[in-house]
Each structure stands twice: as structure tokens, then as C-alpha cells.
Length: 204
Image 1 (cartoon, helix red, strand yellow):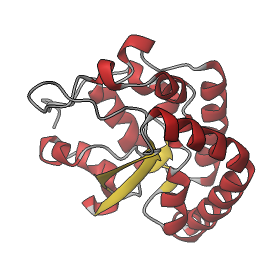
Image 2: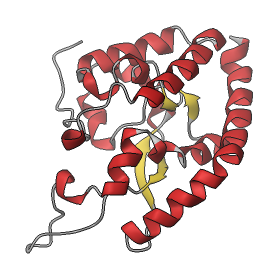
Image 3: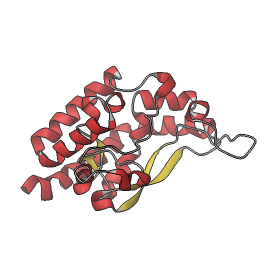
């Protein structure tokens, strides 16, 4: 309980600060590449639900351009993701700017991933429990399959984390995340990096 209420926030601040400090050279290299790839727009901002469903603005590196069809509609994911963006997603470097979200308290280093607002009414009573803690840059579901598992399994793992939040488990998830990033495990194939949208389930 002490870690959940106090220690976890302290770990988040330290990890986010030193994470940004150590990754700053890489951060600026990616920033420059995306300035060219995305016509001067290196960052992606989107409203996401956080703890208790409170909405905040998540920040990520922008991996897709804004190209539209003749009707003014955005092209499909596959046609908009850039070469730089594909690489960033594969090695999870697009997540680095979320350390700013961690610093200001919208997110935690470890927790269920913040998903789309439109998913909120689709969750079952049990699945909604994923919002009892702050969303994370990485989480238990991410080190146990990431985009390669079903939504139901992902939410099951999210709720497991809520019930087993501890310093030991957070350290374990951090180490497993580093391993997953190094071997690029658990990400969909390069042609399908964007997971299919959640449409609800029959789970209670």
C-alpha cells in the first residue's frame, strides 16, 4: 500500500526524468527525422482516458502523415504510416514523449495502456477496472503479448496488474519491456502494426 500510494509516484518521477535525460540525443535525432517526414509535425497528441476515466492529452512521436483521399478523408493506416514511423513503432521509440505525461502525473511508467475514449462504453464491469490505476507507458499486457493477443486477454492482464500492483512486479515489467524492445517481440507484422479496433465483448 505504501508503494502504491507514494513510492510508485516517486519512481515515476525519477525514471521519467532520467529516461528523458539519457534518451535526449536520440530524442532530438528522431525529432529532426520526423520534422522532415511529417511536414514539420513531429508530435502526435490525442485525448485518452486516464485514472478513473479522467481525460488527458497523450503525446507520442507522430508515425503517420495526414494524407487524405479525394473526398478529404484520411487514408488508411497502411497508406499513411511513414518509413520512419514504421521503424519507431517496431522498436517502441514512438513512446518516448510519454515520459512527459509521466512527469506531469497523467500517466505512470507502468500500468494499463491508455486506449481510445470511444472504448469506454464498450468495457465490461470487470474490464473497466483497468482505470483504477494510472495508465502506463508499458504494462503487464505489453510484456505478455502486446498486439499479438486478443483484446479480452489484454484486459484480463490489465486487471491482473491492478490487483497485483507492487514494486517487485513493476521492476519485473520494466526488465521484460527492455527485453521485448530489444528483440521486437509481440508486435504485429510490419504490414499490420495497428491493432484491430475493440468492438466490445461478452465478458462480464
